[in-house]
Image 1 (tube, rainbow, N blue to C red):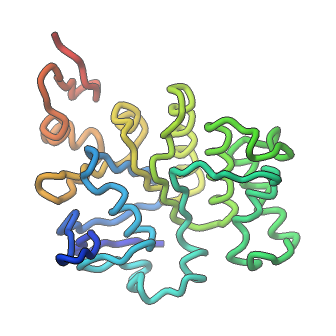
Image 2: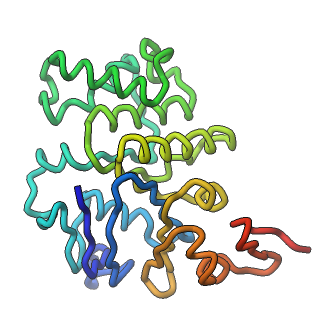
Length: 259
């Protein structure tokens, strides 16, 4: 499934008129790739991700899914094409992990629909793909942040959408869990040919795990796109994250602190 952006402008309406956040974004999301969206606070990462996930309308330009405007799809159709994992911790009690993952099947069964054999198989496969078999009977509210995030990713996999958007999936996680999470998402993108797009503040991990980076520039309201190696070679990374006491090693794809 192709997802194409043509001269996209994101933002939101205010009483004084439209508040533009980012402009002139022309790009494609690639199947089988993990793409990380990076940018400073206030640059509009959440606004861009919410727009791509069809949670809010663009101010201009087009978003095309398999060549058709995103606006031409019904909510039901989008639910079988776009999966979304948000930052907020789900405050859910009285629900087991398997039941939560099974909620990913609701676009096919309806909210109160019973699961068919195929639905049960999709849930089993999602749990296995994320590696949370030992958690399946645990109550969701008893899980750690990292475990809970895995459950929400399994729910998105059970939804069986070709595209998955994640808003800050490594927020609230300790460093080992951050590494595990990004490696998991990279593996899912590569082995399942999923289009996985996420926003993150974890620059160093994104440089080491992402197939492609989107650098959202608060000053110019635009996006610079490329592989980590390409953005290092053309100077975009050191320009974007420059500052006193910071140097960039383009060969190692690493930022260093200097005294």
